[in-house]
Length: 289
Length: 287
Image (cartoon, rainbow over all chains, first blue to last red; front, side, top):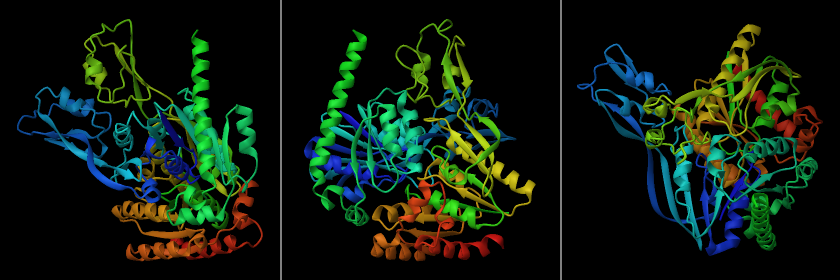
C-alpha cells in the first residue's frame, strides 16, 4: 500500500504527519521523502544511512570530427539545449531533459551521451522504519526524474509513506501518482484553504481517495471544515496548535515524541485510511459490476 | 529599477505575509507573485484584474489511432514511459520532447500545445500586480515565473516605478531558480526550526551560486531562540545580513483571516519587527 502526504501550501505539517505516521507503524512502514528540493524527514527520523547513489540524466556530447553541422539536433531539441551556430555546436546541458532525441536522430551518429547529476538518493533505517530520501543537487532545476528515482525504491512488502513536495504542480503529481491514498495536510487560514482547493483540483482526476488533516486547527477560521463537508472530503484528524509540539519540531523531535498522546490518534488515522481505501475499492467494484 | 525577491526554501515560513507587509509599507512598487502553482498574495491585496492572458508553455504528444500501424517504435524511443502498451500517450508522463513524433514511420503523432495556465495584470489596494495561476497539476512553472517577472518589469518601466517586490516559490527547483535568476536582491524568510535552518542553508547556497546579495529575516524567532542563534551564525558565515527577528504573534493569522496584513492592524510585536526590517531594507532598494 502507498500513502502520499501532500499539502498545496508549504509549511502546514506534511513532514510532521508523514514521519509520525511512519513511526507509529514501525517495522511495517517505509518512509520515502519525495520533497527532494528541501527534504526534511531525516531531521525528524534521524536515520542511519547505509547507501548513497547518484542519479543522473543523460546529456549530449558532440563528436566534432563526425559532425557535419547539419543542424538537425537543434531542430529536434525542444528544450533549447543544443544548437548549431556557425561552425560550432553549443550544448546547454543544464537545460537538457535527457530525451535522447538529438543522439537518436543525428544522421552522422555524432552525438553520444554523458550525464548530469540531478542529485542523490540515500537509504537507511530509522529504528525499525525503512528510510529513503532524495536530495536535489543545488542549482538543479528538474526534480521529477529524481522523484521517480526515489519512488523506484518503494518496497512492495511495506506500507510506503511518501512525503510530497508542497504546491500543486508537476513534482506533486509525479509523487502522488500510483498512490492508494492521499492525505492533504492544511491549516485553517485563507492561504491554507486556497491552496487546499488547488491541490484537490490537481489530484482529483487521478481518482485516488483522499482525506484532510487540519493542523493547528484552532488558530484561524472554520472555512476548511466547511469546504471538506461541502466536497464530501473526509476530515481524518484535527490537531490543535500546541507550543510543545512546535518547540519539539524546532529541535527535530517527532510529534508523537513531543506529544505521545497522539500515538493512538495516528493509529486511528491509519485505520480510517484503510477503511476509506477498502470503501472506495468496493464502490469501484459496484460501479463495474 | 530594483527587484527584491522573497524566498524561503522551506514552505510556510511567512514569505507571502511578509511580501504583503512590504507592499503596504513601500511607497512605489509593482508586485509580482511568482508562486505560480499555489499563489496566495492576491488573498491579502484584493486584486481587480484588468488584463488576462493564456499561458501555453509546452506541447504533449498525441497518437492518431487511425494512422498508427501499431509498430511500437514510439514506445521504445520514449524515455519517460509516457506511451502505454496500448500505444496511448499518458499526458502526465509526457515531457513534450517530440522524440516519438520524429521516429514514427507513419507520421501518426502530432505535438499539441495545451493550456498550462493564465497570467494577469491587476490593480490592487497596494498598486499594480502581475500574477499567474498554473492550471492545477501542470508543468512549465519556471517559464511562467519568468513571464510574470518580465511583465512586472515592463509594467514598472511603463509606470516609472523603481521597485518590484517578488513573492517567490518554496523549494529550490525550477520555479525558484526562475524567480531569482538576474534579481537584484534576495531576502530569505526562515523560521528557527532545524528544518528551517537546513532549508535556508540550501537556499543560501543556491542564491550564492548566482552571486546575488542575500539577507535574512527570522520569523517566529522566539519559538526556539537557540536555533535562531544558529541561523544568525550560518548567515554571518555566508555574508548574509540578518535584517530582523519577528516574534511569534497570533495577530499575524488574525489579520490574515480578515484578508489584511499585520502591519495594517494595531501595534502588535510582529508589526513593529516587520517595520524595522523594512526600514533596514528600503535604503538599499532605492539607492
